[in-house]
View 1 (cartoon, rainbow, N blue to C red):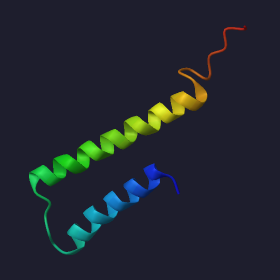
View 2: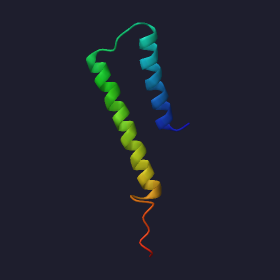
View 3: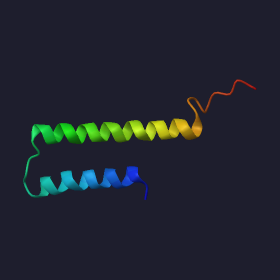
View 4: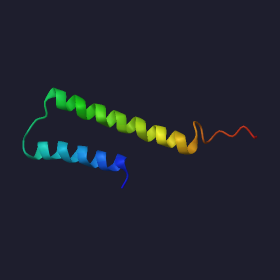
Length: 62
């Protein structure tokens, strides 16, 4: 599994375990979860751009 998948799964497990235990994440923890998810989204998009280019569907004919 790649690092993206590992971090995403671990983050979801932390949030799910807190919900199962009836524990609410603090505002700071919720913000941190949101920041991590945003960074994962950005890294996924940058990886896609690295492998496929900025606009892979556009072909200028050259």
